[in-house]
Image 1 (tube, rainbow, N blue to C red):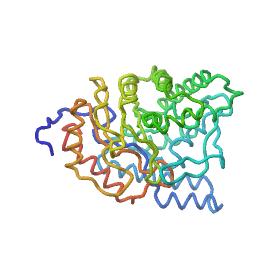
Image 2: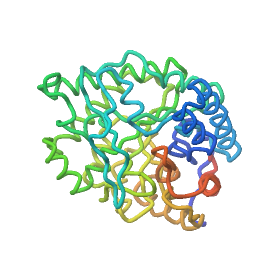
Image 3: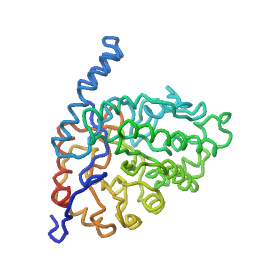
Image 4: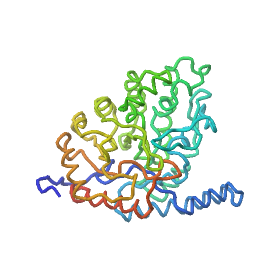
Length: 378
């Protein structure tokens, strides 16, 4: 297990933690049955929520039992990792039947989002969702939301009403202002560990996705600076006891993916230019390139969480092999600024990835085991 590796001493006082996870979990059978029953009119939404509450309490207990210091609700109430939240913003609508998202060899159901009015944040149903998570998880509660750039990038100019926003600068301004209120509202609800999930940075590493961005009428060369400014302005008033991280996703639907390419094109802006406390980076396959871009991580309190355990299959990795990869990463960033996690969530959409719940929990157990072997403060 890397006998030359120095073990870190002391304690890990803040997120992200040495052993962490991105957030989403496979939907339990009870949740799937309840949603089918709701669609068939056999139960009402109140009964569905009771069942979701029971399952969320159970997965929180499981996360604690495994030794994870941060607990999510598994996103068990959501259909999508992003649309459920974004469609709750004023001026944003969930669309049906217009467009599917294409992954390698598979497509999602035909839902998407469209900006049809001025983007605002007044309130949101997920505030109540977080309140329940906070009730059962306490200070360990970790909230996952789509990051500020997500509303723009996937649809681009064509998904934003040109009569409402003839000038995209106004759209970026409104979205930033809305997210500033999002952060404040969830802080007031008790959130101290917030993660902005964000496919944008991974897609900007892909020549194919950059070409598609241009086809939608956007300039991918300008977008990193625009997005970095948005995020930094959202984080500008973040209270000192709140920790905000991001997960850079490369696409995750039924074990398929979208983007490939190393982090080099965005690493300096992402790691050194944005005021996040931590970065969950996917490193489970060669599609992510090498660890060299980690050299842009500023020395200090920021952390990179290495996504070395795949959620796309049930095959359990070797603890020794994961530890060796942590050693490789430590050549480019200080070991004390590194952590380990699965590469993504287990169910970015309600369909879930192609593995069992038992395999999911074994992978999270592996993450905790590796972290304890590598860092004394895990």
